[in-house]
Image (cartoon, rainbow, N blue to C red; front, side, top):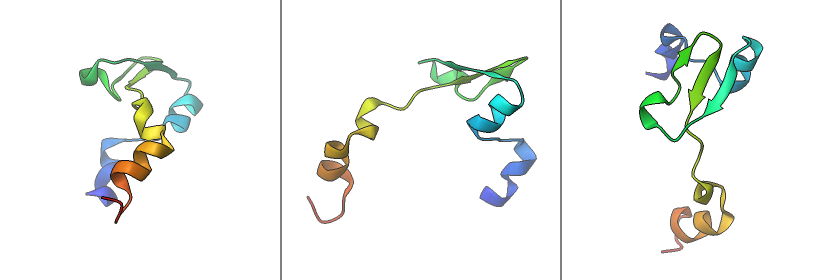
Length: 64
């Protein structure tokens, strides 16, 4: 499916900024990556996904 994503006009957030859109963080899941006029809504990553401890405890192979 990845080779066909260009059809859906999916661009990374930095490209949205280049297009002049404001990135608005929202906890509303149904708004994730929805854009209207000059704004695009994004749901922020949970803090635990940025935690090295979380990755070591739950995601690294062979540690469980």
